[in-house]
Image 1 (cartoon, rainbow, N blue to C red):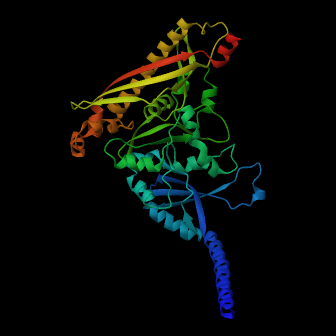
Image 2: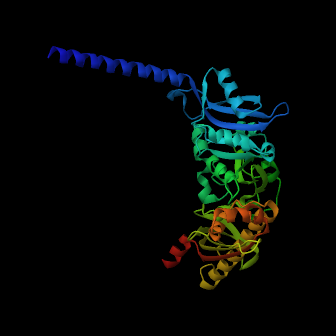
Image 3: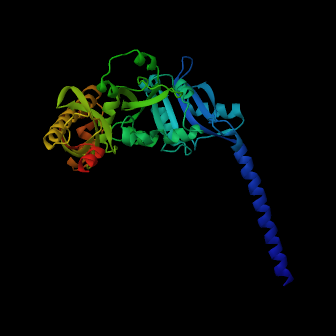
Length: 411
């Protein structure tokens, strides 16, 4: 009995010892780590890269009040991203941890030279999450980082985590992650894409522009909007890649088209010609009724791609004397919406094929089923033949008047 008690006492001491020292070890490990929130990568005149790391400042719960949490940005000029991490580790006396990195920003200048080395380095790092977003900045990437000042979030990390969540209901930017970018970079059926970012510099110019055109609202890209606020950084549009190099950009309206082809939109707002008034437009809220239907004919070296959409829509803007509740007028608006979207979507598709030669839509995944073997598909050379593609876009939209107007009429 005494031996049993003695053994239990020894086991208890061992357990207490392990718990006590494991806690100290954990605390020591946390003290030696610094968590990166964002990485900005630019070109450098003296070396290959200028890399900036953003960290949140150490704070306690009492210091987080109405003001946003501040951040620290350290920049280093190096020959590679790996060396940048290593040098900053030594400078800070702490180990960089990338597991909380939410965004990776490349300057447009660097993206035009190719970013495959940086993408492979980041993907090869087990700390980097595949869900981290990729932004291509039209300005210096470090400057974009410095101008990112969220107004509705105390924690900048929270802003980075949530800023793409408006994509499904605005369609102004994609949710483009490094995981998807890498997969598209190495595949033979599609091309990579990223979020187009920039710093707003045109607000004052927009103020002085007295002409108002609803169509111009949809032709903007990052750093071209009229929004004014504390946060100067903005994300509007898509950076289109051919391989690891940026080949072009999409504006807001073209991004709406892109996300529809990718089945990534819940709803979107467009301005279509008003059939009752040729000099005005109607704001229409459109929602996909089902996923896009795509049929790809690869019997020749010029792929023929047929696309069918089904939408439901509601009129969002009305005038008090408009007769938008009659069936004839609603049918006329539906036809106007169909013609408008068919034109927009077709122009977008031919831009990706003829101008960019980049299948960011992933039509190659549909074409793949036409071949008996993978090698036959490779021999067809889809990514090069996409520039020879022809498109047939058909859209069927059922437009209804606004919900509140319907209810008022019925009562």
